[in-house]
Image 1: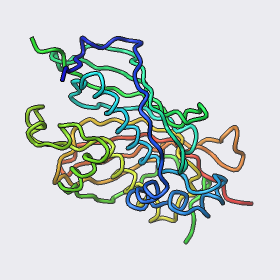
Image 2 (image 1 turned 180 degrees about the horizontal axis):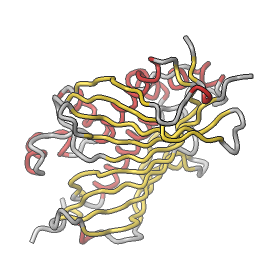
Image 3 (image 1 turned 30 degrees about the vertical axis):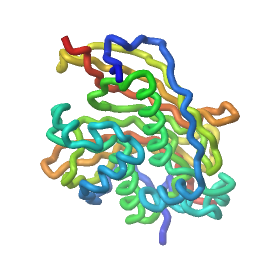
Image 4 (image 1 turned 45 degrees about the horizontal axis):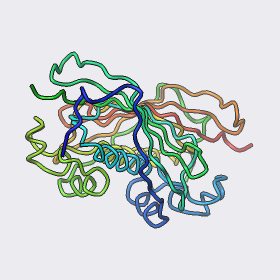
Length: 150
Length: 150
């Protein structure tokens, strides 16, 4: 399979289209293991907090985002990612069981890396968009991507 | 159990001390489910990338961070968190099987919320620190926290 190197990436290009349906049991199970706050594991607590039921842990939504991001990058040749360096996240709206989330992403910036002449840093904005068009998760990530080997 | 409301929080105060040992099988299993890039599921791929073996998915480290953060906040009375609003993450060093990570956090800022007179926004810097003192994960989070009911 072709690999996508730093030189193959284009600022402003978009990718995505991957879909994930949030299943209630999986959402609750993830929260019981990693984020067992009442609002994430108990419908009554979510109701009392004004959410109409349990809502997803941000860590669970991050895992979904990570999975769709990876699947998307596999489609057009695996991106030659060396490492994730960091991210800014926004969680503008709660995620609920039954939500169908669509991944979309845009390359914002490509620049060299001072310490790694064999690679560069790609800043990408990714989103999870609900069926009704509302953004429930937005992440701007900085990723170290390899240059094409000489 | 006492709850910690917005009024109980103090800028500059620190908390933490919770410990997590990264178990190899759990690290790999999480990656196989949510982030099956070669470098996260395959020691040979991690070796070839210069990491000396498989390294943790950032989504897995985020889950560990979330768990320790919750445990820490339970200790001194559950914080009256309404919702996480966003975060800035840095992943300065890879996490590996066998690492022992310690959670520590400091309250950076407390301010009112324009739309929620019953709550305020707390900005907290949290870290996962390895046994050798190196920071492997740093997150500045914005959290909506309830004021004490009248």
